[in-house]
Image 1 (tube, rainbow, N blue to C red):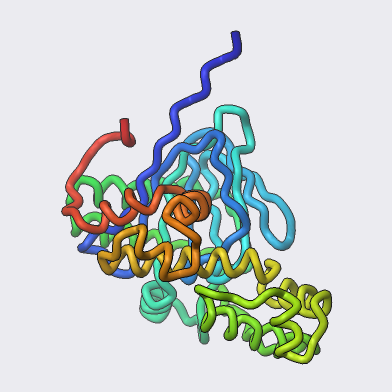
Image 2 (image 1 turned 90 degrees about the horizontal axis):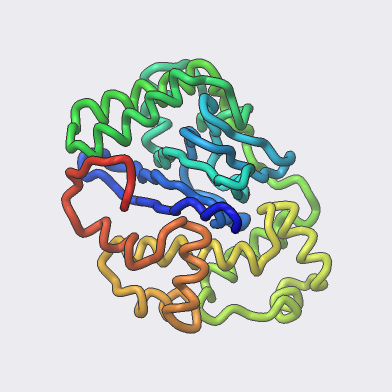
Length: 286
């Protein structure tokens, strides 16, 4: 008989005393994250196993003692790098939160960001785990302090100003217009051919331009955008079934499948976490 598959668990939540921050602590074995992006930053610290992170420049492997830093809107995917999977603690601070900290402790001009994606930094990895531990214990002073120390440390050691994203490619404007149209018509999007025709382009030219601008083809980007909008609806108290229809998924199971793949937890669990007071302890869900 083969070895039993380790138990997977995940908690994706917000601590009310830390506005502008999402937290994810999880163990994944079979779960894979498809290519997606975040509105804010991602700071991940692996505590066990190995995570393979696929980025535009290639695949990196994150193990204990490393910190993965992903800038806003950078497409990436992730999966287990070893059979036993990986366990990690991740912080998702907003652009505003990181910018505020950068303004207080650095001389960076413009939008702060990170030129490196993965660094060997056990001390900061420990601080990231400490933010989770303090938040789960309801210790607002410690959680807020450790969060700011961790972000300031990352900015001081690895921060840089993000380059401006002025469109230079000939198809960049077409891609931007396509993105606007898909956002406006998210619930009933046009076909690729219809979209290209409206923009005076061809389907393949639009595919190439969109992927060059956003790192994903339009259909993958749309799924990611739908999940983002569903998150905002769930945070506002909308039921998952209603959120599914509102963003253009055919039904709740359709939302469940894509939401769980991208966010790491089902929409029902995500919504439930935002309707409770957070004072828990323990290494992870049972």
